[in-house]
Image 1 (cartoon, rainbow, N blue to C red):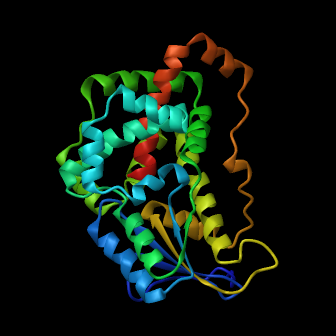
Image 2 (image 1 turned 120 degrees about the horizontal axis):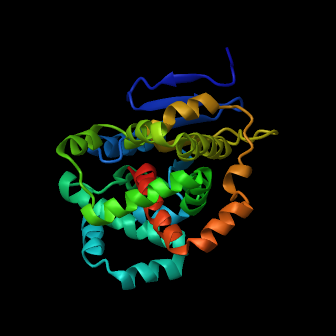
Amino acid sequence: VNLHSIMEASSELKTVTTLRCPNGSVVYVVGTAHFSKESVEDVRRTIRDKRPNYVVLELCRDRQLMLTYSEENILREARTMDMAKVRAFIRRDGFVVGVTQSLLLKVTAELTRKLGVAPGGEFRAGFEEGRRMGCRVILGDRQVGVTFRRALSALSFWQKLRFAFSLAELMTTGVNITAEEVEEMKNKDILSVMTGQLSKQFPALADVLVEERDKILTHALMSAANCGQLPYGAPVRVVGVLGMGHVAGVEKHWMQPLDVRDLLTLPPPSRRSSTVVLGLKIGALGLVGVAAFIIVRKLWF
């Protein structure tokens, strides 16, 4: 038994997992479903009860707009989405993140209309409650642009072509969400559901979107708890707000030596991939769009 990694279920909330550090720090990980009002209340209650020094959110700078967006904001932005706004996103954030932001608004607007609640309410609750309690709020996830590029580079040429066909279908049919999927999103972390589906066709994609981010989120939690590297710092209390699909991975990697520097960088492009991009510029743009849609659903839903 690893005495430095004691993991126990919270006696108060089934959605909270308690992780302990050798320096006496305690980390309370709230596993959330991204469209669940119950998850919002779990986050607020945990922060109030535990009074942490730090709150770590499964967000990055590229996605921090979620902290200020309400249902009304999302619907209004989506209704007014046009090419001028897409170009503005691209100028501000770069092509990859700009396309991702545009697709995100369309998808989230459809989900918000059907569910009656905007995704990420648990993150907004963590941010608001943490600030109210005087906590430092930390964005613990990898930049979405880096995740996107790493995921795309993990696919073979033929897999990227399959993405292109998927994009064509998406553009002609739109985003269709069944009643069953709506109910599923209310009670489960879509990360787990989507991972199972994607792993069958694109195993490398699931590794980038889930396994790598499990390590990054674990590292962020351990760093906040002053136990990420020796010598350890003073003991603190930390609340982490993560999709429930990441909790098992965090438990797996807890208090293990983690060097995530390589996971935060872009892999160098191969000569073949550079040739493909130059020769098939239009196709490449299509691939970016469909991959952005898939990854948006993975990261946010």
